[in-house]
Image (cartoon, rainbow, N blue to C red; front, side, top):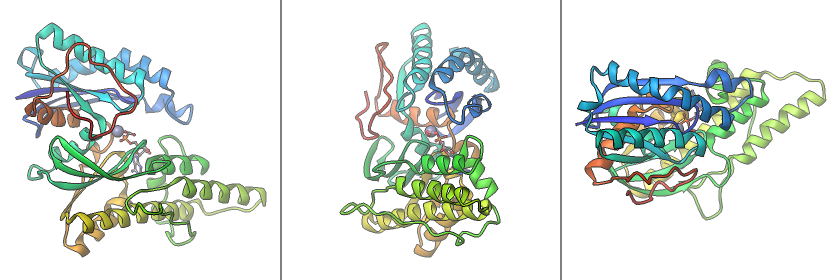
Length: 338
Ligand code: KG4
Ligand code: ZN
């Protein structure tokens, strides 16, 4: 079965053709990063306009790269939530038009579910149930993936997402957008123990996260140093901050794995590309006898192949949307399908 996946939740316009939820036949991404870089972050109005300009060409390229046409596509899957509303609407409306014109089933896909599904493309043997740490720019969730379409959130951030904390710290250190990616590159070789950061815990909720205090402490440290006219080794600072964020992510994931008895641990979302997180989580899993699954790096960030993968499983579970499908800025991952 061929699924055409469409993704436009943030700043990548993406389309892909995926076979039976597991094989990527094409994966096209038009990134807007260079433009948003000028402003230090995503400008929603610009993102929507660039999606509108790019989407038609991106979908056509995904079809031609896959050596197929719309006549051979069996289903259209589209990200409908969560994300920037104006950005999501471009993909949703485009998908609706294609579904209507070609009499194809339309399957709405939750963005975080699709990040998890990126792992089905990288690991043909991976099947639920498993425990997943979803770490993206806007979300930090510990999710029990009970089946391809059943999810329970057992922990999440009470304030900033891990990606957001990395991005804001990187920005304060003068690194370009997207900060997390540049912080990862620039911190290689830095001393992770040069600076100590607090390790916040949420009382009574051992799997919940809080990153805003950590973010504020790195920003304060930079301001204080600046005011005193002192210099600071940014490589050491970056390595120490990443070490602090990653330690919290690994410790909470390990606690949740013990509590739930999960032996399969999965990473998902843009921050899962982080080299320190990948290495430290591998060590954590190895020492506990758990198996770790991470997406290949190109599938960690936003893409439409993951939408095609999750769309296949949502289709198999009977999910269908009508032409009244809307986009939503927020939506719990557990929300029942359509
Ligand atoms: O999943 P994603 O592409 O978009 C959202 O759904 O939010 O995640 C974007 C986030 C940003 O915070 C970005 O800085 C972060 O992923 N990111 C990284 C790396 N690559 C992307 N963070 C740390 N290390 C990386 N290598
Ligand atoms: Zn994402």
